[in-house]
Length: 440
Ligand code: GUN
Ligand code: ZN
Image (cartoon, rainbow, N blue to C red; front, side):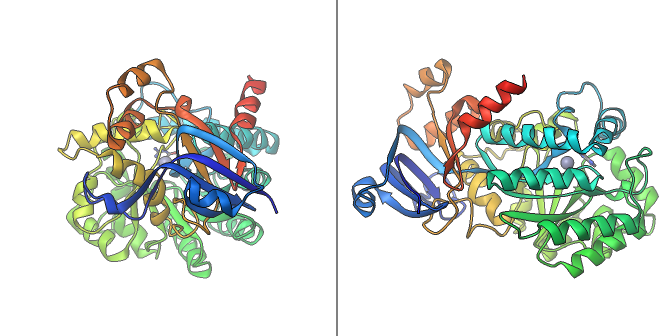
């Protein structure tokens, strides 16, 4: 048995705060104890109450920092670690000019292995303990990601992209190959350790109807797997999609017809939606995923979180690296605030931090395991320092409430504000930072 007792300030959410005054949506403790035992949270509460439960456990004192559940990133592209910050294009040109050439390199398993380490290190130093990742078309890319996540005991979701058209030689599978490779990866990795497989047709433009049919068959055969794809990100994409699927009522109808929509479905972007598509999202329980840094970077458009929420649709929030411009969920909440502000929907910091933790866990159907600091859940914890930079410390001198402090982290925070990260109870920040330094 391994036990560690963490001491510090603590914030965990019980539901999405209805507003700034919804104090029952969360627990905040000034001097908390968090007892970690064998990778799980064994107890949580006032330090004076928790400490006697483990008199021999080593104590790590994180005061005055704030302990929260590890961040969850619900949409990110593992093969795009060397695509991030590529200039000047919108979605389709960006894919063809920058992204596909880079993804070709993942035919090499050694490249996959090196990038998997770098990718998980970047997540870790940014306080992200679970991600939902698109891999490349190559089974070896998913293999490398799951193998590296397993070595670190990280809860990781991902899948190889299925794409059988409109991509260069070397970056296409076939409907049968895409099915067989995905099925083999499911057999090998889904539910093994903390891994979950995500059936991943990239988007309608790169899949023939035959391939989407196979993806639907795969989903029907493996109802425990998530499904992820892209939806209505960019106007040129939507127009081309309509040409490729002339019989479809709209973009979402394509995925609907092939049985790809349900509560385990994640739809990246979902910006330019028609009323019927919004009805179908509400009816099927599929989840749009808001990727603010990406949507601004590619000039894609403004995600209407408030409008969707009013229809009972629950969205995830995510980085979408490499069209996204930061691995940091703090920076993602910063840009998310601005996108929503443009639409008269200012994102309150309590809602923001709920979203990046328990909210994203709920979207994944995993809130009983990750996203909170509740006893019995997995010990994935991010420790935040609101005074990480002088600019933040100066502003923090004038902050007197938790919400103000959180907003400083939301607007000004990045990897420097991550004081420590625990993955299944093990501190991982120093190792991830050290490995990144060794590589460069
Ligand atoms: N649509 C299809 N593939 C991609 C991708 O890799 N990134 C983004 N942002 N959109 C996509
Ligand atoms: Zn994406």
